[in-house]
Image (tube, rainbow, N blue to C red):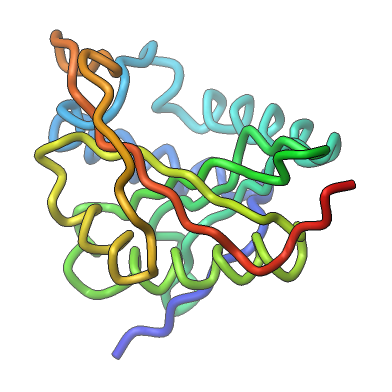
Length: 177
């Protein structure tokens, strides 16, 4: 069995992420927004990582990578963190097509839940999946997420507006301060 871990993203992850994203660009077109060609290059990923780390520095996000046996195989992150009376964030993740079906996404989500609760002290995590993304829905269900609605024409990808299922998971943490 492969060992799965997650860690905070680093500038040195740019080449690996660019390679995975460019390789899977067509395979994931249905699920991800269109991006400029630069996004799929090491320089483009370096710029994206810089922005993610800036958000992390402001307490607005926890951007991570999914690692298997010391190799980056995807990304996981908690973004749009709201404090005050909300104490919530938005969970996002993907794993390279080369590494799907091996449990990496599920293990990464489980580890991200621990970070959300223990390190970020969040009370709630939310996520979205397209209606047809049954694999991702299964990962979320496995980790105690519940669906709470459908947003029609919510996300534009691969030339069409897509309906999305909204998910939530209530955590034990999170003071209302």
